[in-house]
Length: 82
Image 1 (cartoon, one colour):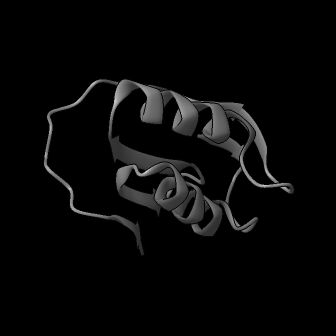
Image 2 (image 1 turned 45 degrees about the vertical axis):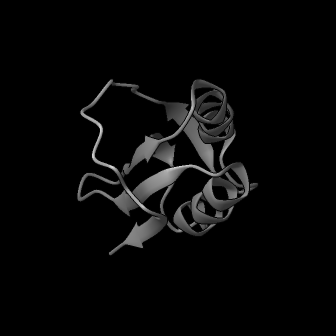
């Protein structure tokens, strides 16, 4: 995600939402000011997570999201990476 997505509790809120939805993976801040999420789940779960990512937490201003298919890694939970 790009935009105003760091310093607005994006990672913490993404962690909470992912756990509510049942998505596994991680969220991390990137050096360029964006946020990256790797997520695994059912199609329905991933659609819900993507819809949340488009908005983010209240103080975020998401400009763009880039969605890519990836290789299944078998995450067991959803973590915040620092």
